[in-house]
Length: 284
Image (cartoon, rainbow, N blue to C red):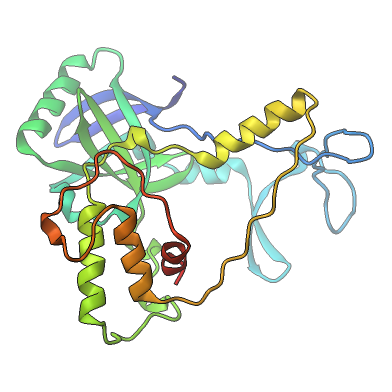
């Protein structure tokens, strides 16, 4: 793994030297823009819109647009001077319960490993946190980006997850078109709750796959092999929704009827096929 950050965890007067590694990787299939006529890749040119000339990296500065077309410029040294020694320290501010944090705050997960002779302090912090059942809320700066972070125990490793500051979370009141507590049909509600119950199972991440990526890689392989590929267009679905019919069809798809109720046995590891009605109900 590539080290993305080195520093220390600080809690109280204790410092734990650590190295940080990204816990996730982007599996998206990268596409390039290509000239159709010759198959050559399209290059991106750093060009000044005023001078209409290509600009070398040495002639580029960072700027903040405070009015349309007006910038204040910053040299790299000026921005570096704003960063203090805390950029190399993960300072734990508080210990809290994980359940108190809404998932909307989480950004990206990293693994932390002991650095230099920090093994004993690392293990001490890990076991103390494991025993307390708490997670640490800290501040960290990665690549000039300041973030809050949550440090927790993940198996035998300390993991850190960057989280948004509160003022970075948009309030729900800004979401347009939310219903104002409309009346819910009790029979439809009961069937919806029954469907949720029948589709409830332990979270097993290994059973979820990126179907689009699989299909795209298959298509890439066929094109490389020179095969002629034809993809049938998807049928357009009507947007007319009969909620009761959609719920009934969904329950039938998982081999449960309203008469069976919650006492019916769940199907074993069987993926329910979506009927047209259930697909329509989901799109409402």
